[in-house]
Length: 182
Image 1: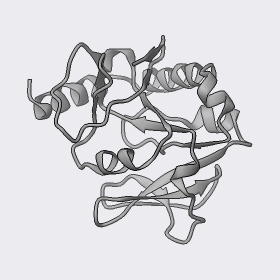
Image 2: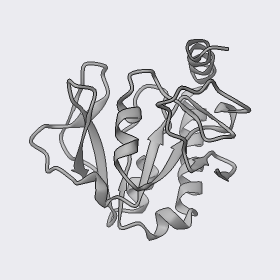
Image 3: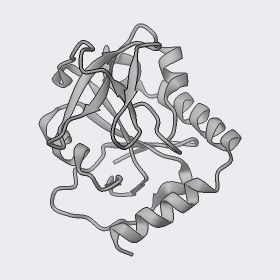
Image 4: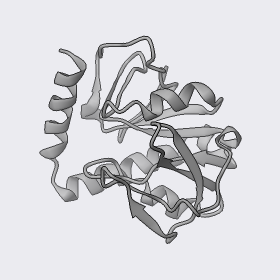
């Protein structure tokens, strides 16, 4: 399948999840993340706010209120600006409807983050991540040294995805049942 076909397939899979199933997956994946030594010891981590049918990291934010969290804001040039995040901070939807920090929120140097929790539609066993196709993370990930962890349900971990030269492999994939080290 092409990347576009994989995107359609994985989105259809997600659409079949009930809100209760999605909430349960989010909780279980966050439980796995909490058991990950790299995240346990990280003083600063980059994350995301769930959009649509994405895995929510809210249980993780609740469990780790003292960790420094960074959340992205999409810039017009397909770059990401990172802002320090505390639960309850003011947010605004971007043009795609994704909640993000206000431009006036305190900036965070992404180079300080030891871990980067990356949203994905799916990943393969080689660490290749399939996103939504806008390229924000493809441009961002080569610029920072933090450990790259994709956050997906088991059903979105597939044997092999198409790979382009700009795809940056994940170093770990975290699902509801396991942590896969690449």
